[in-house]
Image 1: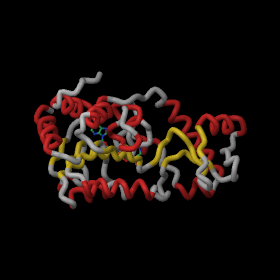
Image 2: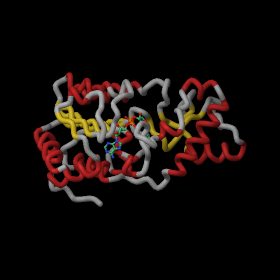
Image 3: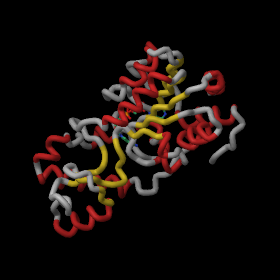
Length: 255
Ligand code: NAD
């Protein structure tokens, strides 16, 4: 761990435009399971594809049932050492932006400002109408769903209301993907943290950064398909590593 932290701190010290790209692995220490590890969410439920959600009221009801069950299980989840270290590195001017595949809001909760955070898979803490984009709070959806057993439709246009996350088969948010691609093209250091790097187009970002000449660092307890093109592969736990890196810069330690 000591060498890994030294190597990563040294790359960060040399970099002037560093970007972090995070996946579900940064949030496992907060008690939120990832998709693909043993016991991950994937092994419990196959995701409901976007087309099924749009096409069927029954699929929508099932999606909301699962969503509320999950939210109840992870209600107390708070940012961990990994999230807090990234926020501290950003405050210290060592990190320009965070691109995340996560939908759990923990980067915001750790203090990363909105303008430096790109959520390419959306956010699970609110809902929107798929037709007119009107925003709904989850409490509004839940009240109606629990009272009637039916998934609520938009009050303005009767369109389907969906958690503001990107499902399989759903279009990626173009503006965010454009900003993420620009960061991957311009950065000199790209840290891929806790992502299995198999979900495209998201996994294309670290590859693009490496092609554009950035140093690519992969932090994951398991091998990934991009390990071969990485400058540095740190096969370790994210929280302890990032807090050790933070200490190298003598930033305040968080518990
Ligand atoms: P993934 O589940 O495919 O991969 C997570 C990776 O992190 C794995 O390769 C695993 O080996 C690694 N990992 C897990 N915990 C770790 C730890 N403590 N230290 C080091 N490595 C660790 O996740 P993904 O690549 O982000 O793709 C899954 C998709 O599912 C994403 O698109 C995301 O939107 C969604 N998702 C989000 C959350 C969340 O918001 N917290 C949780 C589950 C899934």
